[in-house]
Amino acid sequence: MEGSTLKDKAAIVGIGETEYSKNSGMSHLALLLQAATRAIEDAGLSPKDIDGVIPAMGVIPFEDVAVNLGIEDLKYAVSILMGGASAVASLQSAAMAVAFGIATNVLCLTGWNGYSGMRASAVGKAGDASLTATPVLSPLPKLRDFEMPYGVFVPAHWYAPLAMRHMHEYGTTSRQMGAVAVTCRKHAQLNERAMMRGKPMTIEDHQNSRMIVTPFRLFDCCLESDGAAAVVVTSAERAKDMRHRPVYIMGVAEGHPVPVDHIAARRDMFQIGLSYAAPRAFAMAGVTPKDIDVAEIYDCFTWVVICQLEALGFCKRGEGGPFVESGRIELGGELPINTHGGLLSQAHVLGMNHIVEAVRQLRGDAGAAQVKDAEIALVTGWGDLGDGSVAILRR
Amino acid sequence: MQYSKPLPVITAETREFWQGCKRHELVFQRCKDCGTYRHYPRPMCPSCGSWNVEWAKVSGKGKVYTYIIAHQPFHPAFVNDVPYAVVVVELEEGVRLVSNIVDCKPEDIYIGMPVEVIFDDVTEEVTLPRFRPRGNQR
Image (cartoon, rainbow over all chains, first blue to last red; front, side, top):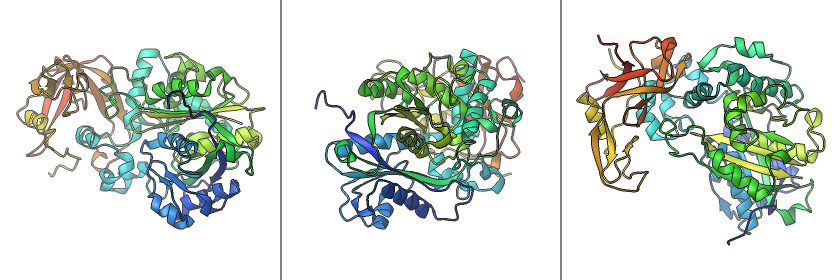
């Protein structure tokens, strides 16, 4: 297999989303199935054509998906357990499966009732002591033993120390983080599916928002949302004959920081999973950061975007703060990011919406947020304690 | 009053650490082959792969490597604690751990601040190591 590559071997041929809201009124399973069936329909397939299922982040057992879709010969079923990095990493798994003929049409999906069902920020108020039993918020027993006793519970607590250290080492500012939030909000105004459409935000609004976990203000934190999204991946060969113009997976990779289970112990806190994954994905795709027309960057927190832009090589280490200022990451700028509004202003459905948006951009279907002549898009995932994933897509 | 905050689940792998805390000694695993300290406790040395390990007492002195201030409680038992600080302490021996600062207002904490360990006997079974500004003897 030496010399073999996944470059252009697989394509995304179907995308599907539910409505994004604070109260879906649907069960978690129904929500995921709605996104799934919409993606399958978008691909011009029937549910029985699906023979691979990847519920990213283990949001749901693959069995529930397979049974409801009436799949008769399921050839490939895995779960990707990388938190918010799972959605993009699932593209890698799906591409491998279709490239080697293990499966023909692979369904990747994420979603949850992230507001009405399991809302992280409601825990303290609701008096819900069951938090430690919530796997999403406690991926590792080591966190339970060595960090929860000190008041470390949610992703904001995990990542804020990184942001604080970044501010200390490189002079990154809260206003720079705010530029990410304001950009996402601005783009959300163009997207009818964005939860924050109709609610514009200024940098002053960001600066005046209350501190949640210093240095993260309220508007540095992404939304909590009900919703789901799904994509269908098939082989490049089959993709040619399907309903929409295929979006090819040029490069894809995942990466994990060292030690993967303990942020505090890392000698270099900014050597994140994406730092390992990005060079691999760019090498596979045969392109450089300069070739990227639009980027959908996983944005659970504003600072996480800054850190990933550095790891991707769009700017040097420590220069992510200045990079995001002055409109560079806005539509019309050098590197438009999160053209759908991102997790910060569209919805937090664990990152599959970033892939959906990248596909829309490359199909030319992104409406008012369309990047003119977008040919190459980049999508990232960030999850758990800094796991990373990246896909480079082309039309 | 009953202690209502989360407590560690003490396992075979972590028992020595927590027993040390109960004796008011901060101990970490140290590789018997390459001498590297490690935390969290693990069977193998991530630096050299060795299974030979000893538990070594450390000075308990270090500096704040980074920190956060939590303003919103995400657990019912912390409702009356906010705002509280969580710090990453880098000990003189190079090992880092997550903890809290006592005897110091959150706004007075800074990266590089010298700190030393104190031991908080929170239950019969569990003692949590926390830190205070160094030189702040009471």
